[in-house]
Length: 401
Ligand code: PLP
Image 1 (cartoon, rainbow, N blue to C red):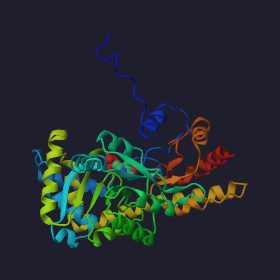
Image 2: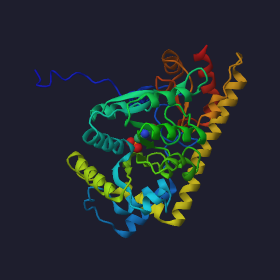
Image 3: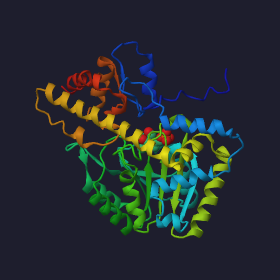
Image 4: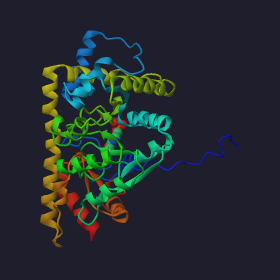
């Protein structure tokens, strides 16, 4: 008998498990709308041209593979904060941001969770209901208590703004409020600028600390600045806040694991101390971060020509998703004989659409139609082509009825 007899089989991951099931399906019609990764119209993975150019530059320069400092590549940390807050933002000028390179969005969230566990014992993190599935795992593993605030209203397939505000108000003073900077995952529903102001009001009133997860900057609207406006609005109020960033989607660097945690403090002195503690947390966890993705980001963002080319490629990706969104809406509206209002699809933003399909209906999508998706009814439009919209519309209508 094994000494590991007591180790039980873990359930498959609800998101990555979908891809495993997809690979095992031999149907020609199969469609993977589970994982949030961009595909071309031919449904192939896409490496951005600017990434290839940056990698060529790196090869030409013959750069070495020495260890990075614990906090990551200095050139990366500089540009990533500037991209987020805007170069010249007072929080940067006044050196009030502690920026540490992280293992993409997930690893950066995990660092922040460890900081909260260590320095804010008992403080709760409020997360939206629903949210990206991994948020709960991250806080559970970091032993940070969390609870949910209302976010999604199934009746309107829109934002439950009043519920959200009253839940944030009702939370214990000094809680952390996790907010999706743009392109909320899984719903694709974002607050309006006016609503963001009201959210900031209650967070300030209650002395809460905003904690942004920014995994889609530039990918939601096609504009890096527009997608960072929520974060900048809070920073402009002089609030202290945390922001986790990811370059998985907007630069297509999924497997490079490149992102950052930024902690905006009220003084340069506090920022320096926070940064020193983030490094102390990172050191025994993974020692120091990988260099390749950090160099790519630093090269692309730091070079005006590559930066402009990146923006064009991002608009292209965001544009393809918008086209697919429109075509899916058109197909559903044309085919559905029940007069259901499908306009929520057009109102949602980013990679995903929250269809409102129940667990059983989502299972019908997979079992009968070979459409792989998460059981919460979320589909990734990034994995859909114009050519497959009609088929998907048939599958959705069949599953709803
Ligand atoms: N946060 C949200 C809301 C996400 O949707 C994702 C990816 O799907 C992430 C964070 C982190 O992704 P990664 O760790 O690949 O950067």
